Length: 263
Image (cartoon, rainbow, N blue to C red; front, side, top):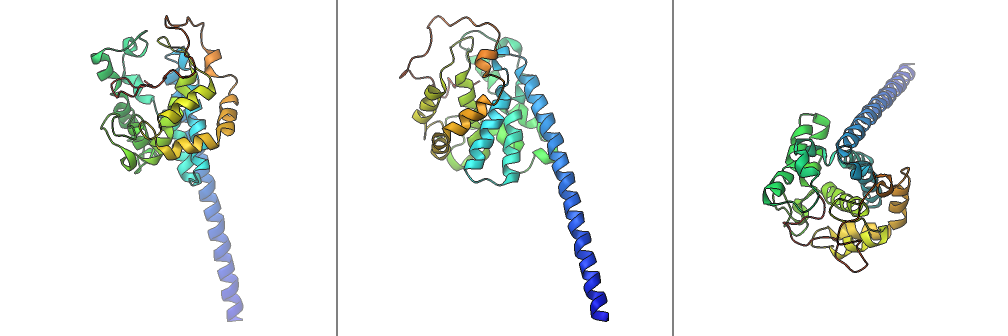
């Protein structure tokens, strides 16, 4: 009889704990969903400052998700990278419009302003505990303009010094940026953008991430097409730059750290 009571009690406790775990998991999922919606809204607000960047942050988030999943990241890690993709440029709210919207190359002072945005963005989200873990959203925002060869900014980190999530977001950010028309250059095709990223593998980008992009091009392209339209065609009317469209074989990305490909 005593053993039966013990067994029944153990079963009750086990079921109660299981329900508690499920409830906690449900609350956690609800919290993440709310956080994700907020991150997406903030990313859209940043992009709204420049019509040529329409849905850029959304595309960076979705492409980053595809790459992280293909690299075998855990669900929790993918969630972090997804949110970081939406918020990667949030620091640009601290950059003057005269710099962000300049038509033409930035001068030295303007580049100093532009290079502040990863740090500004990281400081904006750090007070949120869920975004401030090691290698988390704040760190990814801070490091998404570092280069694999150590020639990026803000701190010139390289290789494994850069959080893996930031190395993924860097590739997604560049891919999305190259597809878009800007005031100082025309956008390019998906194939040409991938080719330019491949050309900069090992210098600007983590070769592992670049290989994953190459192996998952259809998924990535499908992810971009899942938006109503690519932002290239969703922008306001665009006047081509004086140097014309990029042609196959022309270098789209600047190897010089002083002339980054993505702002």
